[in-house]
Amino acid sequence: METINSRTELLLGKDTVKKISGQKVIIFGLGGVGSWAAEGLVRSGFEHITLVDADKISVTNLNRQLPALNSTIGEFKADVLKKRLSDINPKAEIIAVNGIFTKETAESFHLDDFDVIIDAIDSLTDKAELILRACKTEAYFISSMGAALKLDPLKIQVSEFWKVSGCPLARALRQKFKRMKTFPAKKFQCVFSGELLENKEVDNNEELKFNKAKINGSMVHITAVFGFFIVGEVVKKFCL
Image 1: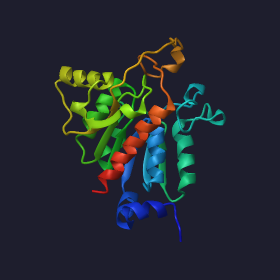
Image 2: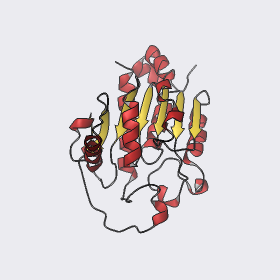
Image 3: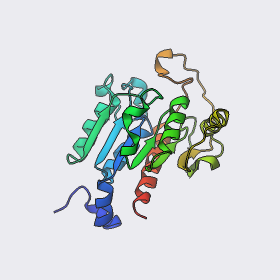
Image 4: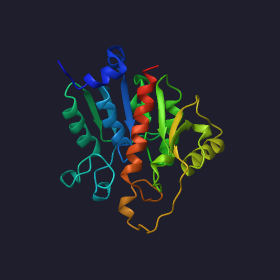
């Protein structure tokens, strides 16, 4: 009988797909990067995925975020994505958390319970907190650096955090850790691009900032590729 995993099993083998299906994954941030990573993982055979995002879908998300439709504007991203992923694979255990990872909420996520932790958070402070805590676990951890202000998908790369070059977000994180004199407990991979363009317009809509210092332009052919790069790295982890 053919299943959702039939073509995946041909490539990876049934044993690997079985191993993948048992991994517990948590994704922080379901925007232009995290939403596509979530879909890529469930289509690749992962069946235990926790989705974390406190944001609701807005009209500005339509250009790049998977759960964003005119019919879903105003709904929680995590709830919409859970419904979609469950429709792709009804056997999958998809948990939606309409919350945000911060220093104050960190303990509630029980990071030690997960095999894979994915960081697609925008906030510098919260991202740094997640990196420090995730790196203390046994989980495979991967982080998305900044996907805004980019147009060329061929410049997207994967590298160890301290070797990421040309990315302002990675640079800001490294500076923050140095000021704190606190560093990640282990090495981890990052998806990034050294391309850096400038906004051609100014967005003064304060309501859209949602815990961000500044809103930058971004497009789906970049953010989605970031997400799928994450999926590729996670899949390779369990193929080795």
